[in-house]
Image (cartoon, rainbow, N blue to C red; front, side, top):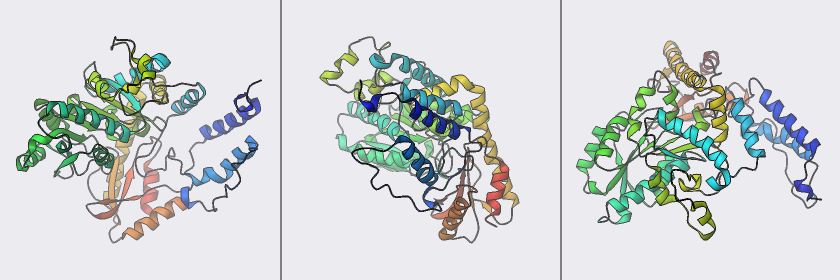
Length: 455
């Protein structure tokens, strides 16, 4: 007789599956309230206790008291930050992953996982124009991907520039780089050469100017570009920066956590041709490629270089590296700052192979088209105005005369009334409004309704 915690209980299983069926069938998914729930949060006192509680009691407690206090990021009315819009197939297969006891750490343990995840990674690398040898692993998000890729570039830079003290090595970045890039470089103990952007776009001209004016340009060992900034969807000069980095043996890291998904866009994929120069590249399927959280693809031009710097060594791990054929052995744990990992790439792989790439192209393009249509609508209205032209699926706009307090109060009202979740942002020191579109079911009627609330 096994321990009761590990015994299969058909009643509990059916209860949980019924809840999942109900949640999956919601159409549209309700927004819910987050911290603005109309009811005060119920007390959790006493829930953790020696004897435990009945599963149905706690599931009911979650459904009635906790779930409404969480904003559903997969709702078509979630237009804040960079949301998450997973396909139904990806959500269902995430349940398969959870129930299958998969450890996606090594080839030894999970060859069946690795080959499927690698197929998805290979497809993404091909879209980016990276060579057939490119590869990597799925990590938890862009922050982990950026930290891992920049670590490899730093360590390779130390080998290439042994005459420079390790703590003096720098990356050239733009002020519009994602916050996780600055945080990663802080963790790595590296300084930065911050390059002045051209209308918030990091260009080769800007880089050359910054290097010419710098006292120690030789200390720059890498360049970090962004393929779709989070705040405005701007794509840096990937071609110019990448070609220069390759010519001068600088590590070229591209953060495409959000915007890299536009490789699937028939109208915008040309903006990303410079990705073929990338030494490391990050794109998050859990953003605009419709996978569940948490799933980011980290790719390297030469994955064997990353393995040399990132693979963990310990007596109990020797067995994972027993196969000397590097083309055969592929441990996802060797390509990022992680060891144990869930098979987080499988839900994306399942959705991609079941829905097909054409469906992905259509869904990605829908958000770009909606951003364009929304910008045109804002241009037509008298009480709002565009801050700049839409880029990818982001639209920045303002309500003239409003203060920061006005935008915050408006955002809270939209959420309380369950119209949409739209949050303000800062642009050049000014508080403005921002639409971030991902979900293909978001439509222009909703946008018009939101804009009308600002009148």
